[in-house]
Length: 511
Image 1 (tube, rainbow, N blue to C red):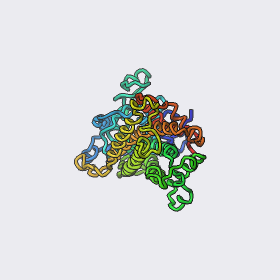
Image 2 (spheres, helix red, strand yellow):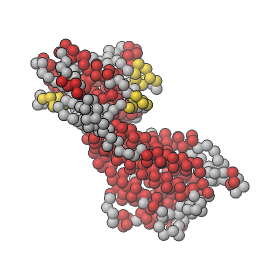
Image 3 (cartoon, helix red, strand yellow):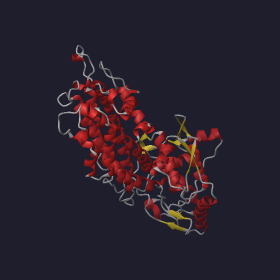
Image 4 (cartoon, one colour):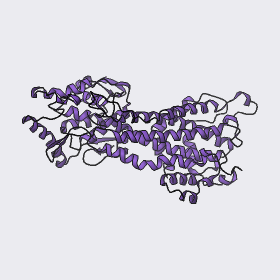
């Protein structure tokens, strides 16, 4: 298994996703330079304590309690109290993949060397990932500044031998696991509780996963659009190269090129509608999917810059030997990225909703059977094909659109008005996850409906190799509908495969 070294080189979104999905292990750098940098930060904190220096979160209380002095004999207890009083998260727990993404994201930040933590703490985080002992993290309770304090307290709690962890698909007390393995819980050094909890790891980890799923949604929706252009006897000239050269958005042009390439067959002219211009949900598909495709540059920049930042407070400068008080825990960039992403993806859901509306409506589907039913003439009165699936798509799309209200504008003054302007970045990321799930459901329905339409039109053997491969990918979970049957299991299986990023494993679709 590939080993990802965390600490000296920046991580990518793909690195986080790979660790989250258990596709690689992690390690810390072995260079003396890196280890010396980490040790210098920890030693500098010890020196300040010996000199009775005032350090926020080390010799003071937290947040608005920063004016409360903590006696030196109680300094070592303070991190434990921080982890405990933040143990008030509620809501659904993050799944194992997301929680793994959170752990590696926090490791990435702390291993940069500006948080004053010990190598022992970093090594324990590595152990958690490589042994797949993953903190159970409630999803709700963060306002995104001062970082993801409450959800990240569940990592700190795990390290000190409190809270629960996922192990082999079960939830067990971490204290029980440590006892079984003969491991001692960590005693957090001064500032290590704050370093673990005061940052943007939860929102950033979710953002990494959302980005990759959004990429796959864009790919799937383009493949589906190509099938629907054929099934609806559309006009492939809407994606003409010269036409798109006149509107120079590179991502939009890329979507149009994919459609040109995948529609490259005799079917284009043999089955073209007499309608001069297709409805917008076919003709303007590159303009809709292309908004995300063009935004990938800045979305990746925002997410990866946050991922590779030191985002707790205060920072400990191991080179200049200074304590730097600031606000890097503020998740504004992730909030903006996720608020924007969920709008782009919901728009793709809406595009797919309009396409299935054309497919099932005999008034506009250019000769396809009503509701895409595959029933014989004798059985036609009984069968309703994709009628309910189209209603489901409408419901999922409506809910996705409802969830696009920007979370970042709902800042709340909290914590005695110390945190008087907060990012809501974690809520924005969770909203985006929900929109993505709903859109995956829409995509699953469109995979089946589009393949059904192509089959009904008798075009299966006339597709380009890429579209044939996409049909076969769908048919691994779906069979043509002749007599009505429940489709829930087939739809959910495709949703699950989309969630596992299966399309990215098919080289035919990635050209």
